[in-house]
Amino acid sequence: MHFLVSRVACFVHPKFSLMATSTIVSSVAFTRKARLRGVVFDMDGTLTVPVIDFPAMYRSVLGDEEYLSVKAKNPTGIDILHHIETWSPDKQRKAYETIADFERQGLDRLQIMPAELVAILCGCHIWSVFDSMAYGVGAAELYNFLDSKKISLMGLITRNVKTAVDLFHQRFGFAKLVMTFSPALSREFRPCKPDPAPLLHICSTWEVQPSEVIMVGDSLKDDVACGKRAGSFTCLLDETGRYSSDDMASAELEPDFKVTSLTNLHSLLEANFDLIP
Image (cartoon, rainbow, N blue to C red; front, side, top):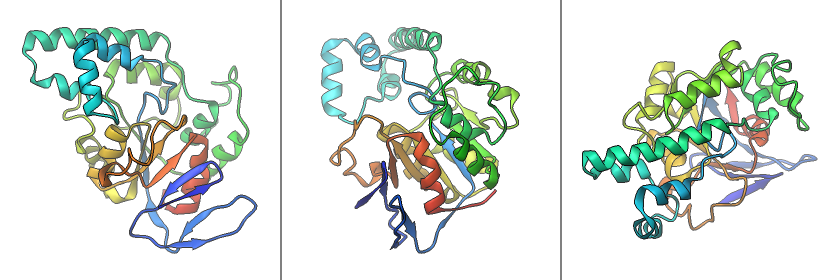
């Protein structure tokens, strides 16, 4: 069961009951809010605008025939890193070279998501860093919200390489700000998502329970599965309606929440969680 909240589709966590509310903008609230102490984000397609042509990359690695076969068996997405693990060392090396080439091209075109996200995440004055970007409606409100809650635990998990994470921090100024994504785990941390290991590592580093953390990302098979397996809350970012209810039929792939824009995180977190600094 899910509820449409403004432009947010919220999938209700099963251990909570609902209490209907009526405001100018419809909202959903739990009778008892869950404690939230940290947020972990995916990078590619979540914090950054998607720039890697994954279908083209998969075709280059697998070949047309194998790509179509693997795609048919994995409708929610291809786990290319897992798929090539069983290949011979020489074949793996060539596959990683192809993947790295696509990722290098992506780095040249790296773009951050709209500036509202920066306001959500940083909790500090960043307007001069991004003064060349257009701010969307609600950016200041979102900034004030997270800043007032003093939520400082922000982590990142990506299947991209560490070089991409470093460039992300450097290019957009996060390394110079009070808050950065820490830990920020790339695919050099093994095993990578959808295994829960990276998320559990972050929770251990923060000294919080997985149930006090939410994983936010744009992939059912990677981000939502990782969060579910770790025992955390999950939020799927689906800006284009990519995923259907059939895709989320599996309990492991059904997110607790679904948003069409990261700017919706403000109202979602406020309505459903007890935010603990």
